[in-house]
Image (tube, rainbow, N blue to C red):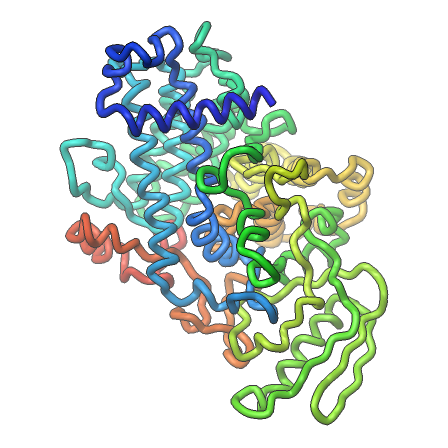
Amino acid sequence: MKRKFNVYVSILFISLLFAGCSDFDEINERPDAFPSSEVSAKFFLTGAQIELYAPNRYPYWRAQLIHADRFAGQFTFGFNGSWWNDGLGYSYNSGYTDAAFDWMAGYNSRLTSYMNFVQEGGALENEKYYAIGLIMKGLYYQMFTDTFGMLPYSEASDPDIVTPHFDDQATIYEGVINELDEAMAIIGSETSTGEGVEILTNNDLFFNGDLQKWKKLANTLKLRMGLRAMGASGASFAEAAVSEAMQADVLSTSEDNALMEKDTEISQWANSAYGDVWHNFGGLGSKWKVGQTLIDILRDNNDPRLSKYAQPIAGGVITFSKPSEGTGVALFDKHVNFLVGLLDDANVPYTRVNNASNVEVTIADGEYYVGQPSRLNGDIYTHVKNEMFSFPAEIVTNPKNQGLPIFPEIVMTAAEGNFLKAEAILKGTGTGDPQMYYQEGIRQAMLIWGVTEDAISQYIATEDMALLNGTTEENLEKVAIQRWIADYTDGFEAWAVVRDTGYPSELANGVSDYDIFSAGDLNGEYPQRLRYGNSSYNTNGANTEAANSTQGPDEQGTDLWWAN
């Protein structure tokens, strides 16, 4: 309760400061304000963490759920009874896209305010908090640029520049890596942010104030970005960044995980969770399923995370009724055979009875996991039965304030650190045993979800998926897929993994059968980015258009710099 109380006070404190003061110095002139001896940058850090990884319900729904989690192929809409078919998001919708862009672009104001307070000469000057701010800036810009591409970066926080120009991604990546180096140099061997009120503990939702873990986080982010940039035009800095990162500490053990615990007391309008959409939107309509690609990989490789990620299907008697008119009449057999074929692929036992007006399928009793294919269109919607497909595990969608466990927000994990080391070695930019790091990555990824050590050992000892025993490209594919699996509920990074590596290929290859799948605006191709929000055109139109001229059309299909 003490941690939650401190977090809540931090949010309240930040709100009062931003809402009530145009100049921080005014606090010291008001008799009812906090005395300087009680003011610390730690109260500002909490809000910066929450807003980046658990914003209010509006962007959480429209940015994470509608776009990133579904582009990642890990969540799907569009079963019969859902309010949305799964083509949602693959065709441009300004309301949905604007919610994502405005949230991310707006975050810069909070980050800039924090940095102005803690930088040299700032009202809350503290170089350790400044270093943490640089790392938060890196996390933010990596997510932001990997979603939209070119962005204001070098001029974004200059108060004298109202319309900042858009930097290319190479500039952003190199700038972020340089700032991560600066942060790590400031931290050095330090473990604490200071003394007295300056000590950062419970207000740090990632590491409880441990600066050495922040340093590992910075180096792991540097390794991620260096590897992603390698091979891209103008990325001459990337190989050196990877080499340097490989020689320093990364997040590698369970104690290093940056997982942001969900606060169950702060309102969904300040700190949201999946459960705020799942339960508060009401009924079956607001629910979603786990994607086929994810379920298939877990199930077909005997992965013990399957039951941790998803629930067994409800099963029972399922009736597919033949429509009496429209395009669905001619497509009825194709639709039903496709859906029933998913049961075959999942080795689900059933009986089938073909009648004149319907097909009746009775699923045998038992625990079976079946993922729903991504991008199913509106034509097949009526036949995509809720009972056939797996819901996410309850720990993902549990409501707040009811004493139920809620899976934390993934910032970055020890699994990621180990997988990145394996990838670097496979690509020839590091030394060591890639399989050792790969298997430790699997182990760390499973531990987060409560898989037992015995089950992990069994998986590593018996499953081919746990071995780097193929060609270099086959081994890189396994690493990419395991990274993608470990990013479950971190849709932005899971989506980036697919775009960067091309794996899982079932997602990266897009779709082509438009009798079943939604073509969207991309003619079935895999989405590469989000379009800029209308606010970018309304407030900085000339620079937005200049970015389009350099980067390519403002469309979801335009490749990002590192994906070329």
